[in-house]
Image (cartoon, rainbow, N blue to C red; front, side):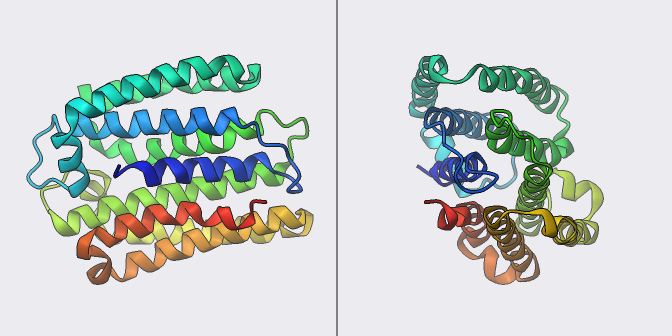
Length: 261
């Protein structure tokens, strides 16, 4: 299914954060499964709700979700049942953190679809993604290492870069698109993507001396993710073909799999 890469990327990222700070952290198996299931639910619902709005040009993914709308609604219900069932196997801290995120998530969806505030999608989606992927692991750690939170900031920058690039390339492909890029312009968007890359580099450089070997490997992964996204930004002609920017942009979230053992 066309959104499965996003789900797997979230699971891989979550596993990376569970193993902090030294690479020996124990992964709570059920949490990545529930996270992946919830990510899939949100992604599918986002595409289905997107299709309710008038779009001058739909992406391949939107067309897929429109064609199989009924089947996907049944699939969402199945994922919801699985997620609720597995809640009983999660830690109290994970459940509390999930509830903490649930209320602002509902407010976001209400504001986005009720009041058509399209330009809030990129920063808020990056925030919720980062909070879910990193937060569900970090809240369960007894030692709240500052570097772990710096890594979470790096993941947020990468997620925000990813969403800005997707919105930028949507504008390249269809100037009638209404998103954050259409509000602030193409050039400021490219500058923002570069600044997010520099923020990652600077924050990691400042904290390098107090990191464990595993945290350094996590930093390298995030820098590589951000670098690939930066390359996509500066080669639009190549990456616009066959929606390459989407496939490569989502694939960067698999990079941490190389440091998992």
